[in-house]
View (cartoon, rainbow, N blue to C red):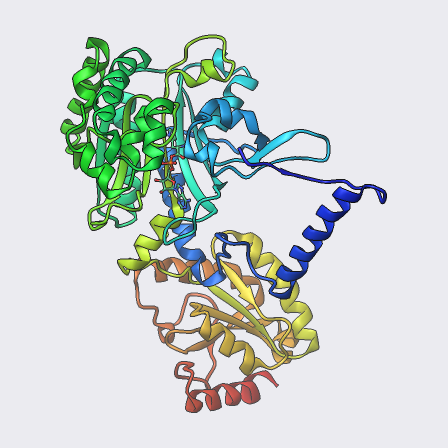
Length: 499
Ligand code: HAM
C-alpha cells in the first residue's frame, strides 16, 4: 500500500530537509494554478438541483424500506479497509489515499462505506439490537484511480446496509431498492446478478479457475499472470482484450455452489421474477471487493453499451462482521449507488429536474420600509407554509423586482413609505402582474390562502375581490416582464404607488 509520510523536520535533519524542499517546490508549482486536485471537482450551484434530486430519492427509498441514516467519519484507521476489503484488491492495493498522521497512526480516506458501517455496528454493540439493523448513508468516498469519464478520485455514493439477517428476501428487496432509485430518477437500468457462494464453495471454484487459467497463462496479461496465484477471482475482472477472450470459456461459479448456496440464490431469483425486475444472470461478475459472499449484483444503464460505468452495485457479505472483530458470524447484505454517474446519466438523457421556485419575494422602498420589511421577512420565513426570498442590499425597487422576476417567484410583497404610514402592504401576483393593497396584519393568511389556490392550479382573479377589505390599486395593471416596456411600468409603480 503506498503511504505518504507526514515529515516533521528538524533544521539539522539534512535528508528530511531535502525531502521538504522537494515538497515545497511541488507546492509552489501547484500554487501557480489554484485549482482542484486531480480527479476531484466542484459541484457548482447550477448543478445542485440534480444532486438534491438524487439525495431526495435516496432519502425517500430509505424511508420506504425502513433504513436509518448513519454518518461515519471520512477518515478511518487504514487497516479497517485492508482487513475488510482485502489487501489484494485494487481498491486497497492501488487506490487507497493512505498516510501516517502526525501521531503515527496509519489512516485512510474511506474508499467505500460498507466496512465503516460494519465497524460502527460492532463498535456500538448493535449486535444486541433487533436484527437486521438497517442503515442508510450518503457522502464522499476517495479512490486514487486513473481519472476518466465517470471515474473520480472523490466521488459520492448513497448506500443501504442490512446487517444481521440472511433471508434471501432481503437480498431481493435490496436489489429492488437500487433499481427503484434509478427508476424514480428516470433512468432505465438492467441488473446483473450472480452468486459467488460461501467461502467453502468458492474455494472449490478458485481451484477450478486456477487449473483453467494455468493452461492459458502464456496468453494472459502480466497482471493476470500474478493473479493466478494471488487472487484468482480477480482474473474475471480483467479488462484486457486477450484476457476477456480467455474468460469466455472459464468455469462458471454457479456450477460450484453447494446446495445451501444454490438454494439461497434460487430464492433470490424467484423473488426478482415475482417482482418482475429486469435482471440478467451474469456468471463472471465477481465485484472488486473481497468481502462478498453469495448474492452479488450491479446496475447498468440499458444504453451503456461499453459496459464501463456501473451505476451501482452490492451484495451479501456474511463474513465481514466476524472479520472486523464481531463476536459471531453475522450475515449481511447491502448496496451502494454512484451519485456522480447517476447525475451524469440524468444529464445525458436530458432528464429535467425542476428548479425550486420561491413562493414570495419581499421588496421594499425607502429606509423605514426596509426596516419594516426586514422584520416582516423573519415572520414570513418562520411561517413554514411558503418559501421566501429578498434583496435587502438593493435600494431600487426596479432592481428588486428584476431579481424577483429572475427567480420566477409567484408573489412579491412590497412595502413603501406609504404602506409604512397606513399599515398596509402591496401584494403583487407576478404571473398576472396584478397588485392589491392588503392590511399588513393579514398578509401571512392571504399568502397562505393564495398559494394554496396556486398549487391547486386555480387561476386567481384578484379583480373579483376577496372577502377582506382589500382595495385594488387602481393605477397598476399588467405583468412584469424583462422587456423595457414593462420596466417602465415598474418605474411608474414606484412613482405612483410607493413614493
Ligand atoms: P463499488 O462497486 O465499489 O461498491 O461502488 C459502488 C458504485 O460507486 C459503483 O457502481 C459506481 O457507480 C460508484 N463508484 C465507484 N468508484 C467510483 C469512482 N472512482 N468514481 C465515480 N463513481 C464511482 C462499493 O463501494 C460497495 N461498498 C457497495 C456495497 C454496499 N456492497 C455491499 N454494500
